[in-house]
Image 1 (cartoon, rainbow, N blue to C red):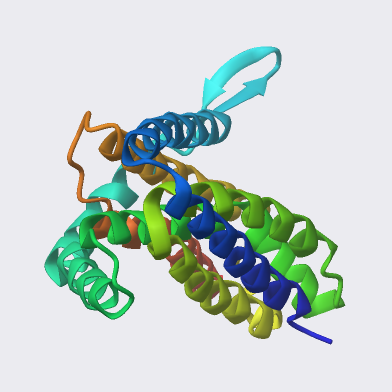
Image 2: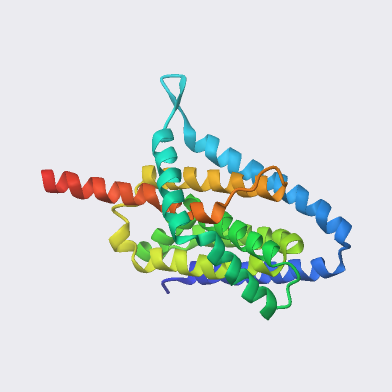
Length: 246
């Protein structure tokens, strides 16, 4: 059945997140704050390692950079679009409503958990390639492996950032589900290079979230979310331009 991989992914995020919420209830605030700092460090490392992996390549035994200009343009244009829409403010409103609905004490932490988990679970090759494999070949092994990783991550993040992490399951369902259902349409555009570029930009945003969690910076990462999809849009426009010119 098509879509089983995404269904499993959503289910394990919810299960892992629910277990994390149970641990959160028994942890003292002092311990939660300490763990949150540790998680912040982990998020910084994840974002930094992902960005460095995408940014550097080895050509003829020499280390060279790649995709840097596109990353900068994506962040600039994505920030312009996101700032105009004011995604950050809309996320804060959404978080405030959900926080009241589910008795969460801190809407800011709710939004942070939601955005952080959404980026971690959606930005990366496994989400895109796994969804394509599920849609085109009905092979969900990649998404099953991703589901286990996301479930464990959701448990850890929910124990420190609360119920907002569970709402990332909605993002995963919509994002991966759309790629799976439209796999035959989007597959020609989601080449390995494009996936790497999207992961690069996403890793930079994950790094920004980690810095926010540690209190080192106050970056409106929500307003930068459109930047993740700009490499794909660029590739589509480029392909159409070449086709029209040829």
